[in-house]
Image (tube, rainbow, N blue to C red; front, side):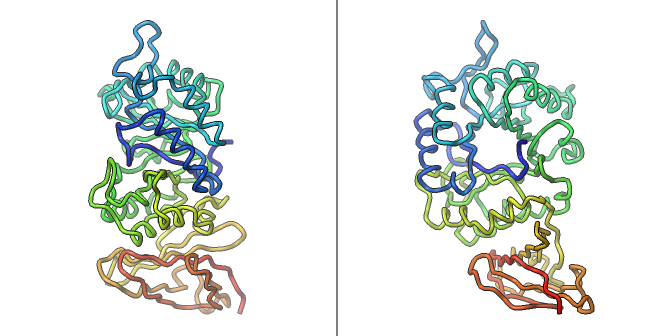
Length: 377
């Protein structure tokens, strides 16, 4: 079964955009292994838009790989990715053209699904640009979902319609394993903050086998690449990654893995955070306490398997602050007779039983994440 837990991997778009090639994909596959990212669970290497020729083959009506970028075709690239123990992903679009104006899959869904299967594709990101105005969005995604199921190969279906058409209310029925619920991210604190806050109320529609995709990570980009914007620092990236993990979001790396910084690599391979993201129950996080006069300071809670709990104290404001948490907001008033032991995910420090109220100091843009166990008084 595909996507029992949130998919993990790498996508070319954030850093490379149109500047993709056979050599770059092979080097990235090598780096995914040598850095330990693949061992940490990042298994999909996905080529985004701009990989094909401008027009389909007039004789076969099939999409053709770009002859300069991929001179040996796409199956040889897929074979190399597979030889590294990774899975290979590609991109298409529900419209007549892709977002970068290459051939889309509209009215070619079954042909394209068969083509991808022939090449050894394991993952399809399916975008939403240039669709005819008369076409129904849910039907377009349903058609590709059917085509992928019919093609004879297990291909993870990543629906990317940017949260249009109330996507969370119907996308699971199309067979998709993940679905984009937001506009495009860029490498800035404001971008990932706004995306995160926009999705908290919608996380209840994300579940095993079909996860809410809040877009690719910008961790480790530092203002470079295709969606560089002004960039972030390591504290910002720490908070972004922790939020994505609390949300059970797909973890798709967007920085150049070939030159990844030690800090970014350590964060992306943090076993405790990945375990929260990959928790088998896939339950949504929710806001349990909000600062009474600083609404950018919040506490998120997430139930985990094994009767444990994750708590994230996050300060999205522009100043340092204490972030309050009232146990009664969690459904654990003092009269319950229970407290929590709390392990700090980043420091490893374990705090003895806490109950009723705590308010750790959190610097601006920063977070503290605890994995908690219940303890009876």
